[in-house]
Image (cartoon, rainbow over all chains, first blue to last red; front, side, top):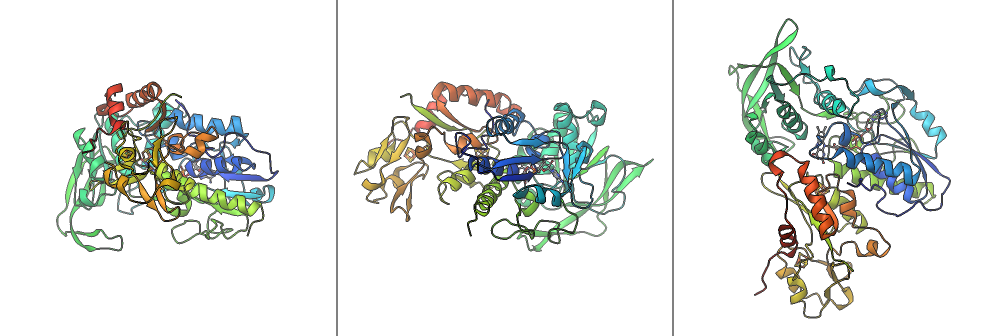
Length: 350
Length: 174
Ligand SMILES: Cc1cc2nc3c(=O)[nH]c(=O)nc-3n(C[C@H](O)[C@H](O)[C@H](O)COP(=O)(O)OP(=O)(O)OC[C@H]3O[C@@H](n4cnc5c(N)ncnc54)[C@H](O)[C@@H]3O)c2cc1C
Ligand code: SF4
Ligand code: SF4
């Protein structure tokens, strides 16, 4: 197998420009930007809070979709052939905030410090926080975030997480709320580990972001699909999840996303017994700041101009941290175009 | 030179859009590989198959479409008169008229890159290893190795015959 060739634009390192760029986040956006920048002769250092580069591609997306080895070899090639230096287990943060995956970092570096020590900085830190739904009982034991569940499973397989951290899912009943890529991947993994899986979604398959193609593969494997329901509360016993109470919904007029809005039907409550519950209802951008230093919008996403530059001159941003949850290809596109801008800016082009 | 194959395995593709993105990037915003989304949200990247007995080559009245030494079906833009015959006969709707070059353009297996020893960008960057490029035997081995690691229902090996057929389009020009 060969690695993802992040430096696909050149064969070897060109003459050095002497400029140094720090990239925060070694996901597809950060690594692709690094690939472009080294092909333009710049020196690149990459900071990431996880133990090795790859981002969601390595730590979260199931192996059957993206081979671990392909990501690892790709990152290694940047290091060995293009002298990219990785600083793993290093969280970059201007203020303070806890995100998913924080148990892996050992050092903290300030964003402003990087801005002082490098000619340019690119932020590509993705969406490492999950949205909370805010219903009674949503903090019971047995409620898992999709990110922690997926990287416990993959982290264990990669050798970073001890076995006792991975919930024993065999024969257990897992409920998943949501219908996007994340929900589908959680369902695949839980099903593979022997759980009985049921997905609850407030619209119908027709509206599901993951699409009927993926959902049908899951259904063929025995994953159950519950349409037109919305969670009302989680029912616990001795502090642990025992069941979920759902309300049936009907579809009303289209909302701002163009999809028909689910309307809960009063008095239609019913309960489903569960051992685990996963809320896969969306993820939130995690910039290396917490409300100050650079400008972020209402949803925590970094605000950039047409050059991918943030409100601080010389700090650029790309990928999910700017756009919210997207796809690998979109993150790569953003990484590429941000790198083009950084290169132009470093060369003093207008 | 040995014929090279550019094979896209739809069974291992995860629809991430990376191939279209990088192709778009190196072709100034006109990607030669395009992703079609079906009603049930299956993502299908479609690229030129560089067919064995390519109907576009056969139909072109000016011989502007030809096969190069690596096996890529290419277009000599200066000979293209824009008659759109190739567009009519391609079973995949691959060739398109470019207003910029005022000629037909299509995937040429990254001819400019091959000239300087680089491989097609989509194959190098596809995270899922769904696109493979190289001599037939190598592509077959890599595709089957990849399939073996895929979801169980997809663990069926591809034969040389099937791979060949899928890049030769099997389309008969009447
Ligand atoms: C469960 C799941 C399944 C998915 N499946 C698919 C799929 O099938 N196809 C597809 O195309 N897309 C899929 N996606 C989406 C895709 O993974 C993302 O869009 C893509 O990875 C975003 O890339 P990125 O580089 O912006 O961020 P990421 O890949 O998230 O990388 C960000 C990096 O930044 C690091 N980091 C974060 N904060 C800090 C900090 N403060 N300091 C230092 N480092 C930090 C992280 O450790 C990480 O390595 C999926 C996403 C999820 C969650
Ligand atoms: S796929 Fe279409 S454009 Fe490509 S060689 Fe075949 S007929 Fe020609
Ligand atoms: S890059 Fe690969 S996995 Fe992604 S859409 Fe293209 S062929 Fe599919």
